Length: 253
Image (cartoon, rainbow, N blue to C red; front, top):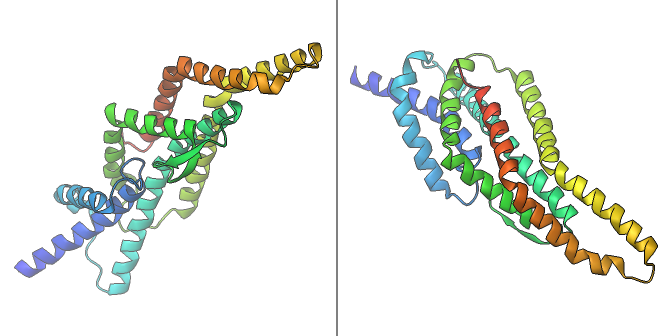
């Protein structure tokens, strides 16, 4: 009797851990490379341990065969990948916006290691990505991420057929929304760059002997960085609102 209870509890724990652990390995912030894998594992194990008594009643019975058990675990891993990627993709909007701003500021070749994107990125995109993650944490939006994982058991019940087509459609829409948001964040800098280049062309026509690009390059860098400092708070507020709205979609009433 005791062995059966222990076996059922272990089954419930590992089923819950399969989804939560996978989601936490991909979520922005905690799923980034600068967070050690053992720390991520401890967080996922602790959260799975806490949630097992709460979610155990909604789980199906333990499959009788190992093949069915592996298929069940695989489906939970796929759902975890979907949840983690859905949250991570939108943060890429800051990467897109920062890359565009760096291009307009003539800083596209000034690269640095971005711990969020886990690749070489421009200075501005790395700054925006780190700032976005800090704001997500200090505004407690990471609580919405955790709540979204928990409430996913109401949206995607364990043992039910996977909606692979719907998953693909949602992720494709998220990628489009992320790129759209990145362009929207960078649009003020596009306007400033357009005005700058028009003025540069007029100046070149009026003063042909003046090395316009050499003289104007420092002004372009200083102007775009100064403009970023002026509207940075508005940009991040718009991003945070968009990020929160994208997470609320996965939450229940």
